[in-house]
Length: 193
Image (cartoon, rainbow, N blue to C red; front, top):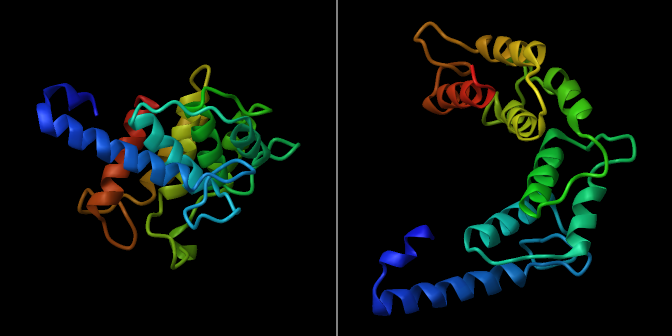
């Protein structure tokens, strides 16, 4: 999007039409109760809402909707917890895009779930494509909202990921993959290690 200035004449017009169509596509999926739903029904969900808000932000299209903010804040329960690490991720990242905060501090939830949401090699569910997916979401959130370093937590995260380090120097289960190895390094960079 930042490269639009290098487009010439007709290219700028084409870009403008595509941007308008994408904006219309996204906004047609906006739910009356707030949030977004790909299916264009009144069932907003965190993933679709996060993707829609990300698209609007990338296209530099302002979006302000109190109902969407309320929907995202309602994903956090009164006791500060979320239904899952993914619900926390989509809620908090979406609120950040909107420049809003959750109703209560999510750090205790994130710290708690770094240990609770671990997937062990022995209990790896079939539907999990990455042994690090949940952990990466939690680390991303932790680095986004932390006020200071938490060396104990950071050490536990790295120790967990190292349990999937293989003899070939890669990471993953049962064998190393480029994706899992990249996630290890991505997590290390996020934590500033």
